[in-house]
Length: 63
Image (cartoon, rainbow, N blue to C red):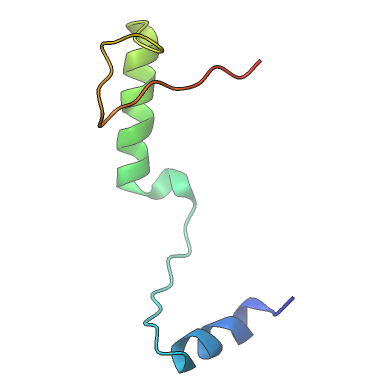
């Protein structure tokens, strides 16, 4: 497997633009919004019910 510092030049050479985002997912505002939505839905017991819509589909149960 290639080291991370070797991957970027190869991807750039293939014609792709690369922007590095070296942060945890929890620092990403969009991820935070998704997490908050899931917590609110869990509190309101909306999982696997019809109150969720296409933009916020039901979360499958993992047993």
